[in-house]
Amino acid sequence: MDPRRDEFDGALWHKSTYSGSNSGCVERGVLGSGRQAVRDTKDRGAGAMVFEADAWREFVEAVRRGAL
Image (tube, rainbow, N blue to C red; front, top):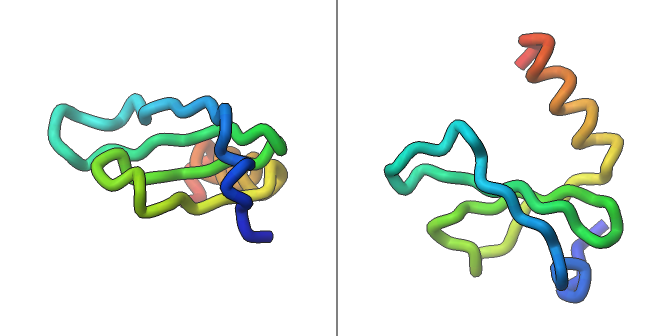
């Protein structure tokens, strides 16, 4: 499903705690629809990758298990 522009209105963005002081940072956004988005902090206008809530949860669990 493609994100609609209005889906980003009011999104809550959080910078990764693994981001350093250099320009290699990413942000995760919680969209009003419950979906999750990831964007590059140095090029926010380029858009974002959007994930369904279940897919995001599975990704995070896989990272925590060390599967990725």
